[in-house]
Image (cartoon, rainbow, N blue to C red; front, top):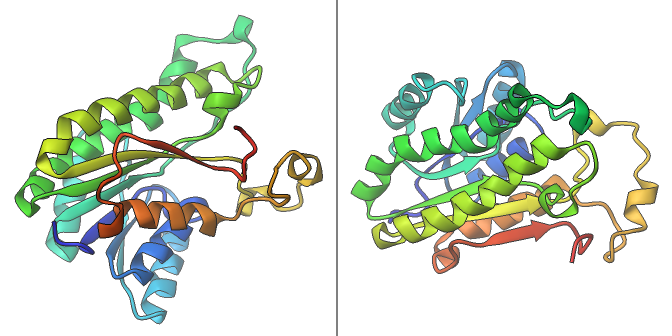
Length: 244
């Protein structure tokens, strides 16, 4: 597999996705910075990458849309080259909903981001990965799948489903030289958490600090690298030991 090649990072206009995109570009990947609504943010990420000497382009697409995802992969391939690394990071709202108020639509809202979107992305990327002799898939999950807080059953169910996807796809795609792994961050403060008091959470973290987006990005960077080529089917928590 040609590494680095072209990496697609979904939901990369801010937060964890932006940090992952910047790190992969620094490692030599040509990065497709995907966004749905945050075009200005995506362009800012691209500018940061280019200012640092990297290669990146912004691509707007709804990654839960069955027609938009194949078109996205085709556009990325035509602009930067075939995608050989997919980082499925895009997310949406995940409200707290008591079980007595929970609907099937609430479940579907989460499953579309965390099961449907990765499925569409991997399916669309597979021809290019197979042609390249291999590839990398990284799903961005959450350690809430293990912590299972009350009121978050739809979110936890969808994030837990990613564990099954990771294991099954690792077995199925391994013979093609494609690795599949799941990164489960803890609470990593990003832009939307500005002003929130993190002190109570921080006291529960054995390493004694909050995680940073760069911590997640470093883990993803290793998994998509040549050095990470013998790691597959794994879920890796990036949370300072908060869940052990």
